Image (cartoon, rainbow, N blue to C red; front, side, top):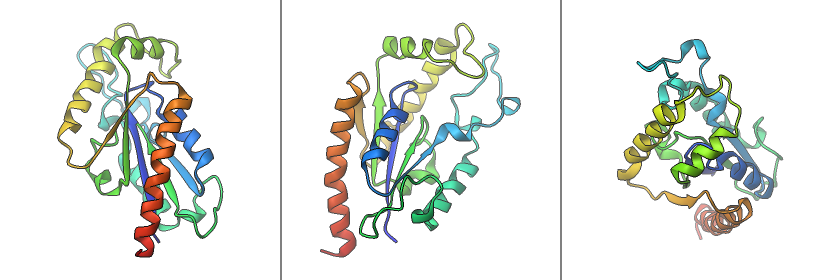
Amino acid sequence: MKTFVIGISGVTNGGKTTLAKKLQKHLPNCSVISQDDFFKPQSEIETDTNGFLQYDVLEALNMEKMMSAISRWMESPRHSPVSTDSGSTEEIPILIIEGFLLYNYKPLDALWNRSYFLTIPYEECKRRRSTRVYEPPDVPGYFDGHVWPMYLKHRQEIENITWEIMYLDGTKSEEDLFSQVYEELKQELTKHKCKCRGW
């Protein structure tokens, strides 16, 4: 069965989850898998020389477990526990995978039909991050000492990726971002359906 897989990645507090949920509401037969659901327990997270817990790295995530969840969806997308509705048989099953480290993990490379990456400037990111409550909570200096440097490192790693990533301005309103991506996806899905039918 043909499927359509969308990646929504980018900076912490850039609006990934909000965008994914909004799209899920409007796209038929759409499921969402969030990378944040696959963090390892705190006891397995490494600490650097500054005492900062290394959460913003791939090693902090159980990526094998996440890949299993994606494989289960691929095998049976119409009966997925993460799907909003069964959708009509005409509709191509859509999976949105959202998370801060998607394009740095090679086994996911072959999946993407569309790839988005949300960016926001340093100051705005720091401001948004300070309003969120994390478990465990951010300690003083954590954003500058770990979160932002890791974001810059991982973003640099994906500069040489061979497939197209659409960069999105996370300072736009939720509505504007949603409209931009939704309109683009509608066109892509139409093309995809035609390809699947061999038109």
